[in-house]
Image (tube, rainbow, N blue to C red; front, side, top):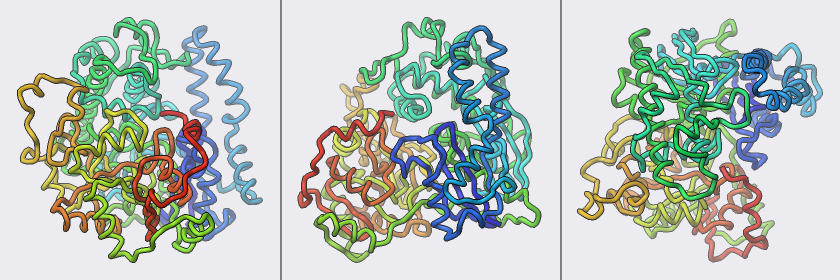
Length: 611
């Protein structure tokens, strides 16, 4: 049975193709359209999935949308009625869009599919619930026969936070917290108030948190959210505006924290850092309480996580270290994009005769390398047609060359194999550098990513050596767990440095791998496995031979506001628009100094809306 899963019309549209329970292809629409978090119908992603499987849409057995639009519309109407007459202007803006595009979504989806291929799709269309899609994406690809499942995001139809049990091919709901009470929306409110973009800037708040102090924790707990011992909670809606207005917070919220929200792109102050640290600690505490409560309720040894809040790798790491579960597994596309995958899997395992095969060790995501790859002949044609100078190297020579460049502190754009599904670059569309370099973090942030200097970078480390560098010894292939750098590798602060705080500590080396050591001695770890990405593994292995360090810097191959590169053309443009030294397109190596100058100037930056 071949099933197409679709997520669209909110943010981060995606498509996923599943055949008899195996994920064949999955990709986000933004990668093709070059529009960050593109919410439009995923035409390009669907076409890619069909190409990868070498089938036509007419051959699909089922097409599944990741949520139920009528239930969502019900929530919208009830919310506006409850808060009336407040929010009337917001109501007038939202309702025409719903009546025109979203209320009759089945018809809209079929119409969009028929633009791709003329075929009657009505009988094949199904809809899952939003959090059911998250739960399915978390459990079914996991390596567990049985597990507790925790899904936390902003909001689906009504649910914002749900718990489930998974057993074999069945998932069963346990409890839910409903809109407007949402841990995800609380985090987004602080994101908005600290001057970052909602639905994309939350990870900046997480990265900013170690620079701050948790001075607002009690203020948040006393005024914004009432948290119970089991991790359930209610928000005090007197402080929030998202039910009725066009902003996340209101004047009462502003008064509580001493002024209006920070203007985007203005200087960060200690206040924003302290707010980030405080909401991060509140989030971690709630997730930890829910984990203990769920473990007590289910008796399961394993925990699966999904929903946008599950991308909070700091909280995930804390649950792994201090929580009650023996094992945890997080869906790498934990946000709405992963809903397409979950919807397709939910439909498959609800079908008669479906079977779920459990390995107990490896998961069903295959390293999350589910996007398009590009043949060497096609890359060569692109380079030759554009008269771009390059060197072609066989694998062994290539790995040695890249390792030597890394050792020389060069920054490398690494483009190899199938593109990653989810928000993290995992060694297929990555910018890489030497983790030992004292200047690498600053160079990558300011001259390559064109982003805020405070943001940390992640390490890619050989799985067998992860415990040599970090206080963990588990698989973390999806960069969704934070761990502390081993104490033996840390550099103690001198007397003057100990007097510094927050952003003042940014450029002071914290360990012998300073480029990936955050200000609090933590790192967002990606373990690299020979089985899932042998080429990337071989590069790090060659670097290890040269330096005795089996760890490098890995960040996504893009600039700020740009989606991760998809094609060789995308990669070349990013390479030329930044200070990346070397570009590797499969086995083709391009040196910046040999390339013809681009005709455009910094005007290209206007292409991408800042996140």
